[in-house]
Image (cartoon, rainbow, N blue to C red; front, side, top):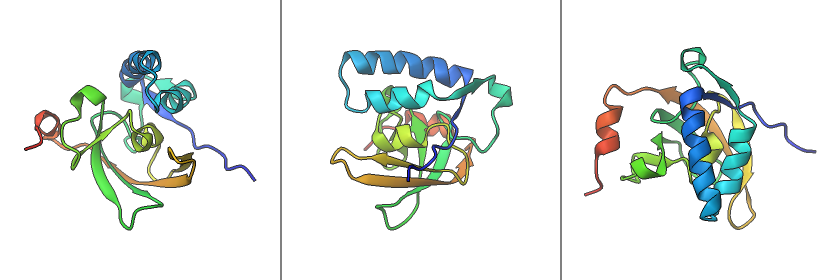
Length: 141
């Protein structure tokens, strides 16, 4: 039995950034480019103001739990060029980052890792931190 994919919602600004990122990633043959492209292509795109507050979007905190981890993690979903600290950043050009993109609190998505093993990620909560821009500029020390 095949699991039904949860819908993806993307604000227009994120969608435009991600389309450019996918084009570059495909040209460079990045290993996550096809997966990210499939997620971006199936997204419902809407005005930024119409995106529900519980949707995972760029530069927002997301708390998620991958099936292969013992506990939940909270990170800021970022573009690769904004990734500087693995403790707080999750690149959208990673398998996990592409998987959580556009999902809503309570959604679960199953995807294959690089070994071909199935991983399930569940979205637990979304949050906008007032100091997210400061965190994006932090550099790993």
